[in-house]
Image (cartoon, rainbow, N blue to C red; front, side, top):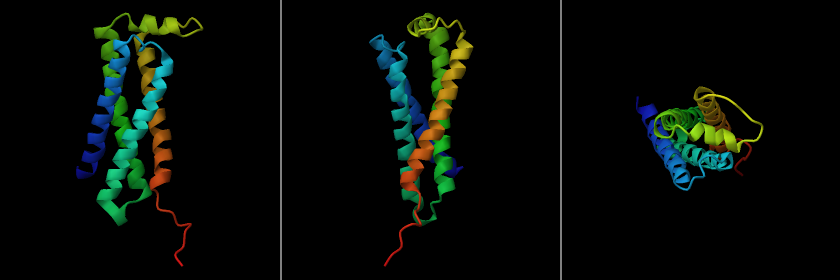
Length: 149
């Protein structure tokens, strides 16, 4: 259980920052513009980076690529699940006009329901998690390319 506490904590904090960012965008009526969702990847990447960094500091020499990768996936997965639940609650209970407003900003005349949009949010979150974890782990992996003289 101790192994899961760090990524769970960072996942909770990352999801809180994602939710706060979404609510700030909503405050300025920018939450229906999909362009602003690209910053979600930056927030997620930073949360994953910090989780792996702290995990590596705690474990030092015993740190492995697999452990860091697992930490990043759990952190991003928790953040994605919590943000997706918030998104579903927001779109159905808090602002029922959100999905029609969102779809109106997207060219192409999409007609879909809340469940489909929520699934897209979850898939985008999990894809971002995998890509960010792979990217961040390049910074933290132990390189065997350098030899000491």
